[in-house]
Amino acid sequence: MNEYADRLSAAQQLMRAEGVDALCLSVGSDLPYLTGYKAMPLERLTMFVLPAEGEGTMVVPDLEAPRLERKGTPFAVQGWGETDDPIGIVDRLLNGGANLLIGDETWSRFLIELQDANAARSVATASDLMAKMRMVKSPEEIASLRAAAASVDDVVGQLENVRFSGRTERDISRQIIEFTTESGHETMDFWIVASGPNGASPHHEPGDRVIEHGDAVVVDFGGHQNGYASDTTRMFVVGEAPYGFDDAFQVLLRAQIAAVDHVRPGVTAESVDAVARGIISDAGYGDLFIHRTGHGIGMDTHEHPYIVEGNEQVLEPGMAFSVEPGIYTPGEWGMRIEDTVTVTDDGVERLNRTDRVYRIVS
Ligand code: ZN
Ligand code: ZN
Ligand code: ZN
Image 1 (cartoon, helix red, strand yellow):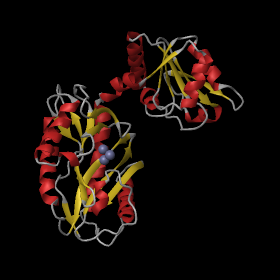
Image 2 (cartoon, helix red, strand yellow; image 1 turned 90 degrees about the vertical axis):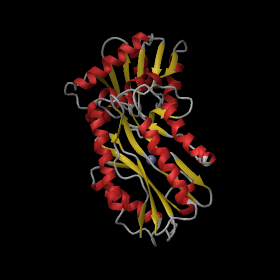
Image 3 (cartoon, rainbow, N blue to C red; image 1 turned 45 degrees about the vertical axis):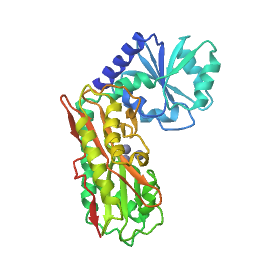
């Protein structure tokens, strides 16, 4: 409980420093990060209104109120009935405050109605403020990420003994969902099984393609455990690698290892991308590495800091993100190696610890 009180007062401190009158959060992870309460993504408005000074108020539909455990929650609760006007309630709580920050994932309808309620209001996104807070994880948060990573690592180990050939991508993905749920995840968020030429599409949805001898298979999956996300990618090769695959893979492996080893406090996010991209480009595969090197990970699978050219964010201990370079040859195969890592006081810790080489499966 104290954790949330601490986060709320840290947010208010940042708000005062930036002349913000109030922060309004609705659906998405910013709200549970600050309050412990996750709003259902309904058409009915849930909005937490936090003034720069004093207590915040959770405006919730009456029918959602029972889900709010009130025991010592560091905020007030204001329910609204089916015929009430929730925007009117939020507008009154804002009390004329002119400078508002609004959560990124708020439905645009509510934002527009709030602006209509007071034309003098200036509204900006809460992205920067919330990123500043959420990017640096507490030791407890890192422990949750580590546990989630250990679960998907177990699943990678189990997949080594699974038969791939003769089965559809969808069949393998169902097995991944089953293994991951059994290993302790509450939810599965994605389960990419991309075989043969399908591997060249980084976010391929598993389908009816039957996996054959000689296929390279991209397996990228993750979910949530104890509220924190997992995300790992490993390569599986059925029998023997297709033409050209091994040469490219050795480059990719070098790039991923070098990028992870580069991570430490004081270097920029974009420099991690540059290390991976430099090695892949020098080997002649630069045009085939078609996405950024990684994304932050925490309560959301994709969050700040993004490991991408142009992001000069300096890495600090407690930040967590993926390092996942890939090489994609359209019509032939694709490959990616992905670990979730965290910045330590003097370097990096890989939260995913399975071997990064490709596995030969039957
Ligand atoms: Zn991805
Ligand atoms: Zn992934
Ligand atoms: Zn990822």
